[in-house]
Amino acid sequence: MAYETVIGLEVHIELATRSKMFCGCSTDFDAPPNTSVCPVCLGMPGVLPAMNRSAVDSAVAVGLALHCTVSRWSKMDRKNYFYPDLAKNYQISQYDLPLCREGWLDIEVDGAARKIGITRAHLEEDTARNTHTLGGGDSGVDFNRSGVPLLEIVSEPELRSAEEAFQYLTTLKQIIQYLGVSDCNMEEGSLRAEANVSLRPAGAAELGTKTEIKNVASFSGTQKAIEYAIARQRQILEAGGAIDQETRGWDPDRGVTVPQRSKESAHDYRYFPEPDLVPLVVDESWEQRIRESLPELPQARRARFREQYGLSVYDADVLTATRAMADYFEATVKAGAPAKRAANWLMVELLALLTAAKRAIRECPVTPEDLAEMIGLIEDGTISGKIAKALLADMFETGKTPRALVEEKGLVQISDSSQLEGVVREVIAANPGPACEFRGGKKKALGFLVGQVMKATKGKANPKMVNEIFRRELGTGQEG
Ligand SMILES: [Zn+2]
Image 1 (cartoon, rainbow, N blue to C red):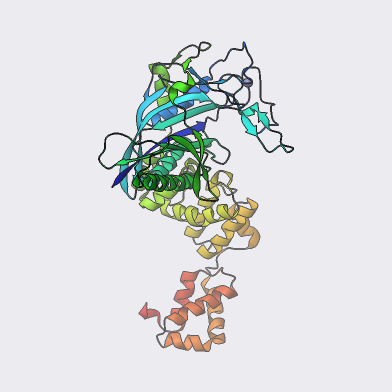
Image 2 (image 1 turned 90 degrees about the vertical axis):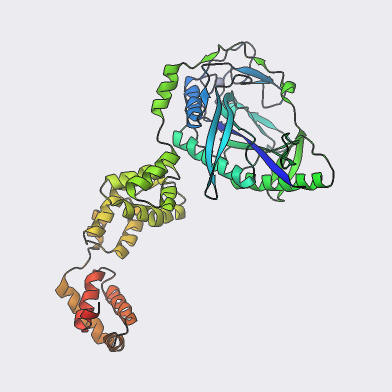
């Protein structure tokens, strides 16, 4: 039987606000355990939560970027369950009236566009962290993370393959990073993705029983876990078995999912309205203020880069991968570098230096102005492209300006024709064989001869002039 794969994704992002969702504690949860805490986020009886306006701003920004309707009126609810990382025995979340609903995300898979529905995006609070590695069989709970604002973004079950799920996550993360509302660091848990996977006979309207995959540390891991889940369910269904509704974790070492717990349904949580918080009212002017503050989003920026700078699809994709990268590129162009040249130097040489140094573009010691100045030095013939590569590495290493380094190291290109003629004649005299070959029509020999001049001048000779002088000296100037 042919099956159709149905995947829905739930993504939790930690909002990068300064303080927690319902109290004034710092969100720096890497502080020593249980130091960023107060009676509210420790879940003491009798305390009163107060909503963090900045977290609402961030949630509305994400909702608008995902084409959602922002609710004029929503409320917080208590989601009741018992777990050691949840001291109140309930999490403040949103149940039937989420802040944002009914949006979509445009993704691209193998060049084809797909529009994936967003069911809802709602605000809630993070839990504390359990640690089971204290030694001596002890476990600890660190409440620094308790109450950190979370935004849960739920997709419609409209994804049809693991590859589409991967693209959805990548595209969503890029938008959220452009908005600057979360660092989306999966390893540190500031972005967590859960996938609901089910199969149904092709053409069936009813959804099959789903399994939920949790606790995967990377998007590629999520993709692999979904692929595994699809194969596993197909095998069970084809053997005439039934799928258990359960939560499964991903074991990356063995490449399999393992059962974790049978899944609760919504009514197990006994949701009811949070009586200690007033309803959340986001009026038109509030929504408008956030709409006006939205940055240009990746899709729009990619299109503009192709249009305005004449860049290829590939170049525009690479240069808009992060907002920091796109900003760096535009600052370089603004500082006077031709766009195509700036794109090449940034994408090839500078990215290689950053990768080798394990640094983000944000931490790049070469400023866009310095890169533009360096490109200017090539354009006006002061330095050769070959020297520029070494120069850029020096700039990266020392943080000095290109002009300072060129002067300090005497890297100025030799464009003095009489000086170059002298070197060319020496090279011809020392290499009669290749010189003779070139004269006889063997064009390859010229490369060798030019290389010798570069060696003698430590790469500083103007290559265009050297080529011309060789042709003149060896009498092949007319051949071109
Ligand atoms: Zn607190």
